[in-house]
Length: 166
Image (cartoon, rainbow, N blue to C red):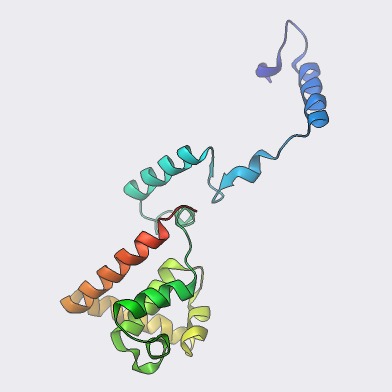
């Protein structure tokens, strides 16, 4: 309220006048400019904060940071994985999709707002199957260099897409 003290007048009086003038002019809601429910500021400031947070802290540790990335549609994820593995979408989501299918499930979980149940519906399986595939793939990534390489290359492609301006 000290901001509204004017020449010895009560800050409440000055604040009341400020609000009255604002109502006549039509005030905008400052919260309409909040980005990702985390940051309020101009685009340049938001971009600087995004770079800072993404470099310092992983999105898994601070879930709100996940919202600073562009959330991808599941079809974007499926398209990128299918293109990388040179296969049709239908084969990718079928039981014949193999390692590409497991990667697609994991990337869908990481880059979309879909939970495991929703991902399961896309792939025609139960959420527990998605969970098991993700767990198994985590183990395989440690043991299979070829799979790990493919996983990293797909992840790089999706990272580029998700870092586009929100």
